[in-house]
Length: 128
Image (cartoon, rainbow, N blue to C red; front, side):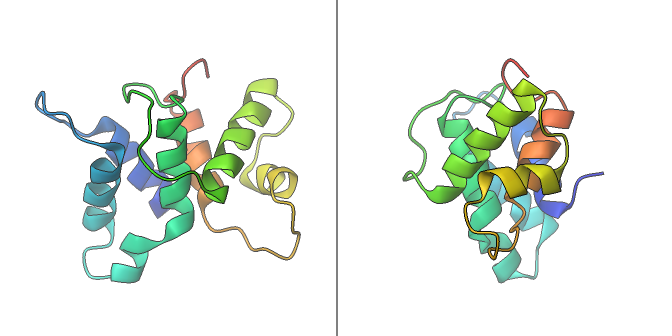
């Protein structure tokens, strides 16, 4: 089972939109609002949000059209690199992905790879 940010990514992708155009950011905010109803810091955590929005923007998430949804940021770049590693089959765990994509070994993992792995393992990555 994914951690809460992985769960948020799954909820955001699988969200019923009833035919409405809902942005990836709106999907993410709805999902983290459900998982962290009384914890604003949990709702606003930038790493997993940036990873999710970046993957959506890059057109890598099934069912969500690509396009600009957020300013480009480091978490997007890290998430897209991690997808390339998963597609290549060279890395298979959150720890392996983080160690490869992160340039600073002192920087702690901030749940970005949990978002990536949850989407990957659930078949929600395009060409995954």
